[in-house]
Image 1 (cartoon, rainbow, N blue to C red):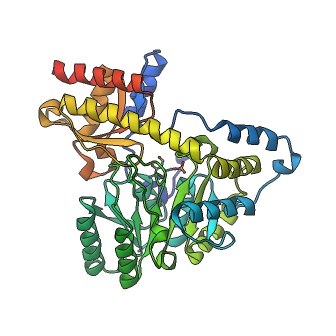
Image 2: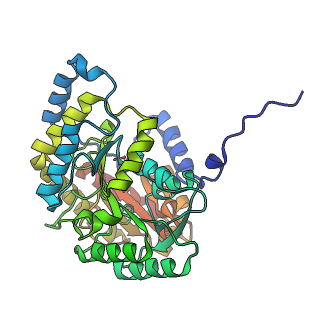
Image 3: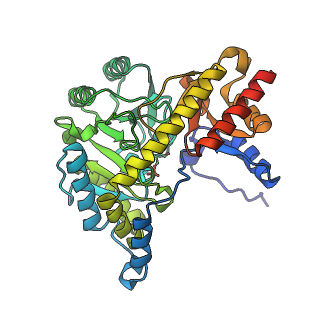
Length: 398
Ligand SMILES: Cc1ncc(COP(=O)(O)O)c(C=O)c1O
C-alpha cells in the first residue's frame, strides 16, 4: 500500500518563507531556560487597555444577549462610532451602513479584503520593505505582488506610476501604509494621497491604505487619513485598528472604511467565514473610541519618550537612525563594522544569543530592509536603556 501523505494546497505552498522562524525558536528556547529576554521584536503593546474599556467589557459580558453570535459586519453602534471618530479626527464623512465594516483586527480584514478582490493573474503593488501580511495576503489570494522601493515618498510615487505604465496586465491594487511599518516613514500632508487618488483613477487601480499607526504620532505630527483626500472613497479603503492607540491588540477589533463596493465585497467574504467579534468586546470598543482620546495622548507621550531613549542610545553606538514622527518603531541601519557583513537575520540571532535582546531584522520585511533593524517601543524606558547597554556591550566586544 502506498504511504498516506497529506497534501496542502498550492495556496499554502506559494507562501514566501517565514523569516522570523529561527528567531522565534531561539527566543522560545531561551525563555524555557528562564533567561530574561528584552523583547522588542514585535509591535505588541505591553501597556494596559484603558480601565473604562475593561469595566465596560465586564459589565457587557454579564448580559446573555451578548453571548450569541454577533453580526459579521459589526454591530451598527460600533460602526457608527467609528464613523463619528473619522468625522471628529480627520474630517471624513462615512455612512456607517455602507462604508464602514468591523473586522477581527485589521489584519484579518486586510487579508480577507485581498481574498475578495484578488485572484490568480492579478497583481498588487506593495512597498519593499513592507509589513509581511501585505505580501502574504496577496499570495494567499493566489495573486502576485510587484514591489516598489520605499525610498522618499516622491520617488516611490514615480516608481508606482512606472509600474502601472509598464506592467501588463496592469496591477489591480496598490497597498500603502503610512505611518509605515517597519520603517516608521510618514508623509507630510494630504498632497501625497491626492496624487495616489489621481494615479488610481488614471490606471484603474484600487487602493488599500493600512492606517494602523494613524493615531500613534509624536512631536505634534498628525498623520493624514487617505480617506480625507478628495475622491479617495471612489478608489479605495483604509484600515484602522483598536490594537495600537488603545492597547487593545488582544481584543481583535479593527475597521475597514471607504469605498462601498470594496466594503461590500469584504462583507460578503466575512459573511461566509465568520459570525462577528464577541459582542461584549464590540460594546467595550465603542467606549474606547468615545472616551479614551486622553489615554491615546498619554500613550503617545510614552512612545515619544521611549523613541528618544532608543534613538539617542543607538546613535551613540553608531547606528544610523532618524527620529520617527509616527508608528511604534525605530528603524536603524547597523554600521558595516559592527555587523561585519552578516545579514540582518544572523545579526538579530547574535543579539538574541549574546545580548538577550530581541529586535526584528530588516530583511524579514523585504530585500530593501537588509542591514536595518526594527526596534519596537513596547518596553518601558528602563528596559529600553538596559537593551541599549546590552547591545553596546555586544557590538563593542566585537
Ligand atoms: C502596519 C500594520 N497593520 C496591521 C497590523 C495588525 O493590526 P491588528 O491588530 O489590527 O490586526 C499591524 C500590527 O502590528 C501593523 O503593524
